[in-house]
Image (cartoon, rainbow, N blue to C red; front, side, top):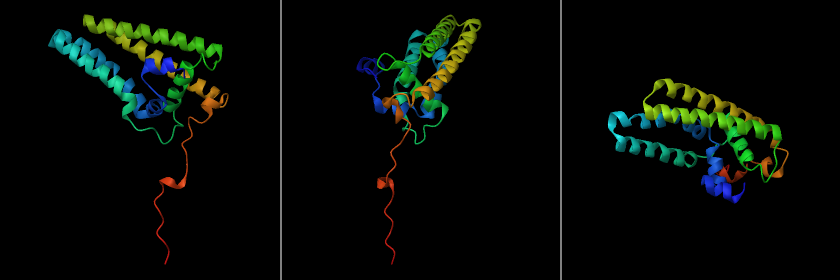
Length: 182
């Protein structure tokens, strides 16, 4: 992954591997309603409390990829989606199929539109904007992540950089010594 992308996301290779934990992926996905509630709360708790709650959610989103241990097994949908995201972000260094890139860009735009609607609905305290915004955001994101899983499956053996992401080193250094036999 280009150094600029890593810096922009604040993630190095170790952080990405920890983010491949299903716990990280699913708890991050579950955060959007909390963000909407934090923003919505401005009418109930006042703007400063809402800003504080929103800041807590943003901090959670920043900490989340580093919080959970790296998964022992990455042969699951969430880990593969994370690996696919890394591959997609690295597409300028290692080209990916054009159809996948275009689909990912379109699905990212759909997700962004839903996210903006969610934010507007939360700011206006309008359920009729917020709920469809949430639905579009989640639908777009889930379809995008599924496409990124497919991208990872296509690319995992196509380039040496991606070949070993899902392999954890296996050796005897992790085992407890066997007591001697008398």
